Structures are given as C-alpha cells and as structure tokens.
Length: 236
Image (cartoon, rainbow, N blue to C red; front, side, top):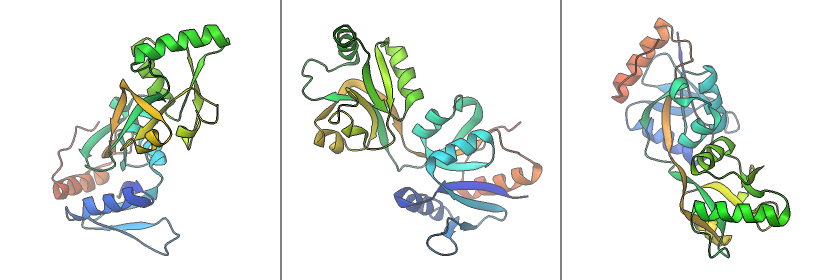
C-alpha cells in the first residue's frame, strides 16, 4: 500500500519543500520533462509524491484523496470548513511566511483600527446606499474575522489576483490579502489596520484525517514519521 504526499507544483514553495525533506533524509525529485507535474521520493518505501497547486492540496486533504500535503495555513483555514476536524498539522516548515491582513487607503487618515472601519462602513452605507466593498479571495476567513469584530456593513468582492489594485480601479474600498513584507501594499498607497491581522500563515505539513488509513498506509506513515522525527496523532 502506498502513502500519497502532495507538494506544491512549482516555484519557491516547491524548492523549499524539497529542501526541507532532503535535509531530513527524504529526497524528493521531479521526474520526466520540465513541463510534467510528476515527482518521486527516495528514502521511504511506499511514498508516492504528487505535484499540485497549493489550493488543490488543501481541497484534497479535506476530501481524503491524499494522505499528506504541504500547503499554507491560510489555504487550509480558508478551503476547509472544519480544519480542526479534517486535518492535523504534523509540522510547521519554517518558510512561506505571510500574513492575511485588512488594509485601507493611506488617505483614510482617521481610519486606523477595525472599529474605525466599522464607523466608516456605516457612514458609507448611509451616504451611498450600498455597503463598503472589501476585495479578497479569503471569504471565509475575512467574514469570520469581521463577525467577531462586530463589523456588518460591508460586502466582499471576489479577487483572485492583483487585489491591491482593486481600490485604484474603483472596484473596492478596502482589501484583505496576504502580504509578507508589506511592500506591495505601500506601493499601492495602502496601510494595514493596527488590529487588522487576520491570520499568520506559513507552509505546513498536514495529515488528512479523512484519508483511507489502511494498515499499509499507516505503516508507510510510521516509517516516514520516524525518518522525519515527527510525532503522529491518533488515527481512527
């Protein structure tokens, strides 16, 4: 029986993931031509490696199609309705750090906190007859954050890319997006609210509780965990 591990399909996350496993005795390598999303592993018998986009890894962890996956904290919490039930973090990998934050135009000099944004949103609705728009691709996380903060007069606008530009393009009044340095926000004359940190994210190695944990899959997992020196949770 094999154990299915999904890792990011390209870019710095893939390179860092390969390095992380390699430093611990598991060699991950791409196979085939450079355009093929295929990989293999040396160091643990029965380990099958898949290359997938990080968002698909989160989805496949939830469905149980894969046993293990490397993806971001943000994607797991956004894509999986109940991550505490469906997945377990085996390790924080120490790379891919980014913060999901709430940001507004720098020109809003009197808006520095979420409470300030709440006041502006209420006034905006009275003045314009519609809700203040917040552009994001993290609908679940932003909605939960604003509910806890007591903010109600807003509408989420879906943005799957170049979210920082939505304010300049007049398609949103505020944004919630991932940032690692804040440079892109500053370049677009945006500022992070003082209490606008929604989630701190990094790459993690997640285990799917929904996967088919046959005796064979468990045996491969135990060998892998022993090689990586990772503790394992109880599996049903």
